[in-house]
Image (cartoon, rainbow, N blue to C red):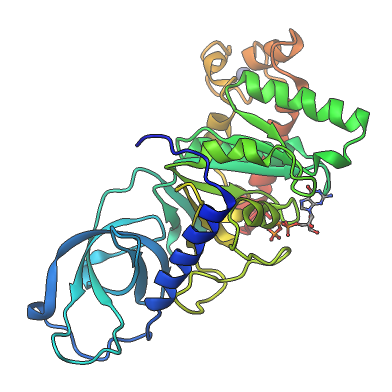
Length: 353
Ligand SMILES: Nc1nc2c(ncn2[C@@H]2O[C@H](COP(=O)(O)OP(=O)(O)OP(=O)(O)O)[C@@H](O)[C@H]2O)c(=O)[nH]1
Ligand SMILES: [Zn+2]
């Protein structure tokens, strides 16, 4: 798709108003008022799941209108971001208060999945078809490269390249700024784009906009780093309570844990939910952790022992690279701290928070 031009404030407002009107029009009851038989259904259409809860899904049709759908039993798991085939219920003379209804018939293959461990099912899919992960951190609470590494590991595990965003940069004094810049320079050398911003001073946030067009993105990061503030700034009218995740899909209240899809004025998408935000702080396997340290990977075949723990093992190529100054000490230390904390968590089956 072609890059779109920057929109004026008036255009953005009109787009938002139209969208809100469309969503409000589609606001519907939880259950269909008539039993649905196949003869009542229109032809198959493409749709995008914008919210998912209980036995229902809100999907967006190709014209950008939201329709509440029931699911065929054969559909299986369905999450925000899924591309589906659906059919509209034709009420032909019968009243359904003018509210549109549909039935989701099938889900298309996902190109990416965001999962979290689930006590009962092993793994649960939280959202799908995500193209970009923005890892948001901030000067306050403390900038932590260990937390950053955890999110990087989880993003790499999805097969995506994280973009690292440091917010509240106006609070950094010279020493803190120097420390952050040094860390970001290293992450950049690994191929991760980085950005320093201040939501409060509206600095740098415009640089994010072109990266968000035509893609499904997520903002992840610890509580309090400013994700809600950032979303409100980038999506005028999103009205996300700062310090709180609220439901505003336009199709009525669901639980606050439901993921929902927001739209940037220039067309990109954002999936947001508490589960999405905290992604990356969950349980990780030793293999996932190692795969997240992409600069270690070309070296491990050179370690003397096949079961090298890359610590004090004789002939460890990773440690040699740290000693030679090719890999910074902080990455090596974080790797071992994360390995150790996951090991402790595995033994008592709790999730890392
Ligand atoms: N100084 C400063 N404060 C900011 C900035 N951006 C956000 N804040 C403040 O940081 C606090 C937390 O912001 P939120 O947007 O709620 O953070 P969050 O990441 O959405 O937190 P959760 O909803 O818990 O995930 C609020 O008091 C914001 O006003 C910034 O650029 N500078
Ligand atoms: Zn080794």
